[in-house]
Length: 133
Ligand SMILES: [Zn+2]
Picture 1 (cartoon, protein in one colour):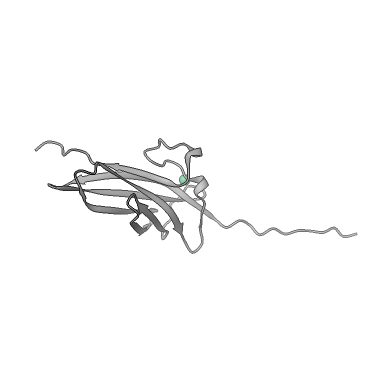
Picture 2 (cartoon, rainbow, N blue to C red; picture 1 turned 90 degrees about the vertical axis):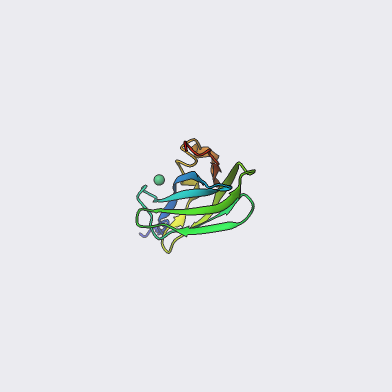
């Protein structure tokens, strides 16, 4: 007697955003926004070689590729002082093996973003006044 057997392909290895941080540096007449992105494998290890793409608030795009520590950064220079903050949203991440699974994103926007708030993953970078002389 035989029984039907179904073989299901294993799901592709997933990756997700494990970190999204914004920082600013101020110049005399403008400021620069820097966003650091961390990509994790499904087991929260570092996912290197991941091409991350995203969009700034004004619609311009930026991309970066994660290093061996699973991190990369994008920056925006020369933001006028009258703009007090800008946001950056990660729209996609691609890798030859890993498949982006934004539903697993965590630790986004200073750990304040809860698990059910995603995606898309957005960080807001605020200009801070320069400290001291
Ligand atoms: Zn993780």
